[in-house]
Image (cartoon, rainbow, N blue to C red; front, side):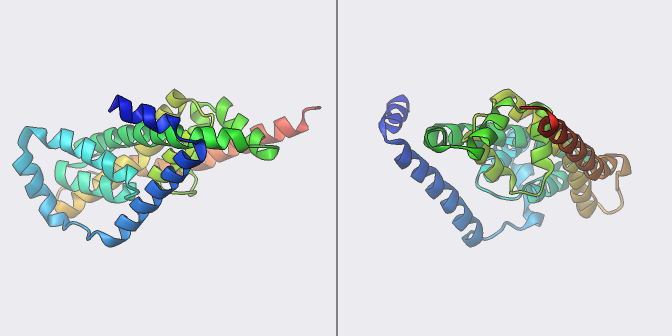
Length: 227
């Protein structure tokens, strides 16, 4: 494994970036071609896995996320299989692992290529990513820019720091994780709707508005400062 990584780093940055683009394109193509699983079969699969089901849910969900499968589907399935609270916890675990994988792949394959070519406004944008706090990552995650996996890859190509990125990714995922897991559980067990588990979903829109407002105020203050 290590010799393969060393050989990869000896490749020109353009070749590694091309590999990243092909990887993302391949995942998108598979997402269109591979048939979707039957949701009714998922609880039976979890029963067969037994005690390994939570680990499989986290690792399997993470791999699906980096393969560009929408996080909504994974969280709904997790809630349908494990219930609202456990399902949300496993979905957040999958989001954390997927964010780490996507960021690492983007950093290894795309960062050098991007760093060699950013100029002007793009350089300032790259510097903004380098200074970004957890709040900034949460703001970007809540914006409807791209899917979870694609944003993770993209962040890896910037100068962003890994710890704020991982923390912000999990925090931004929490409201919808509880909400969609509760919906998934309600679909599989219509008579046992847990409204307390669904309540955090309503915080998503509120959090988005507050964070975007904070970012807008910070940008206004920065632009008003004398150069």
